[in-house]
Amino acid sequence: MPSLSQENQEYLEEHLPRQATWAQLLPLFRAQRDYNPSVYQDTENKDSQAGTGVKPAGSERTEMRMQQTCGGSETESSIPSQQGAGSRGSNACCFCWCCCCSCSCLTVRNQEDQRPGRASHELRTDIPACEESPTPTLEEVCAWAQSFDNLMVTPAGRNAFREFLRTEFSEENMLFWMACEELKREANQSTIEEKAKMIYEDYISILSPKEVSLDSRVREGINRNMVDPSQHIFDDAQLQIYTLMHRDSYPRFMNSTVYKDLLKSLAERAVEA
Image 1 (cartoon, helix red, strand yellow):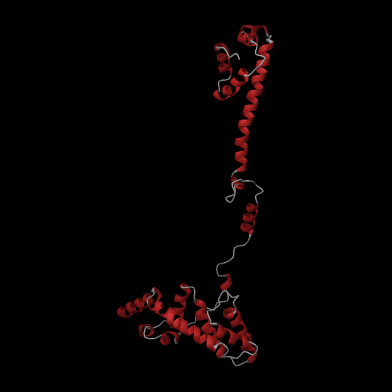
Image 2 (cartoon, rainbow, N blue to C red):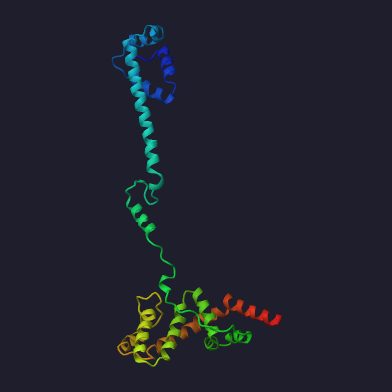
């Protein structure tokens, strides 16, 4: 098979300076079965015949072939870049590599973005506020270290202990104990039934996010007595939670920063006074 002459190569390099296009055209000319040297010889004389305004047939055919090839190569090279630009950006999906605008995970993400945010305390909006109490004295805070009863008997002690339980995500134990104490002070039967039902739903039901840890014996007894609740329906459960706080949480509270910072601040006030 004949190959291009040096003059034809110089002609192509002159009109097609881009190396990429030249590399695509060269195999086409080499693979031409009906290769005719006279066609390319006429092309070499293009400059000499340009003044007459007549182009040889071989030169015109060659230019048409080059224009079609160049146009096709430019179109093909531009398509990937345009597709790449369109497929990225806002439609890009971090969950799949296809980056298609119809990806199902994009729909899920858009729905989540439009969904109103849920407050972190949504399930705890009914938590009672801390008890009102005066600032404890240094003697009272020191007495908390002597026994758990001294801590639980004062509102300031319960508030401080409750703050510590919140850091351990066990505040529901103190809330349940306080709710039981409030139930014991009720005398009206309808109010007792209403509050007993609320306590059950908030702290006994397994569906509640504030469920306290009780053994099966105590839980079964509560379930039986819920038919006709009284002020003391939760006494066994309250004692069990009180014992749990005493044995498990109270020792850690005495070594916590909540207690130590309070004790330190009261000691500094006493020295300044």
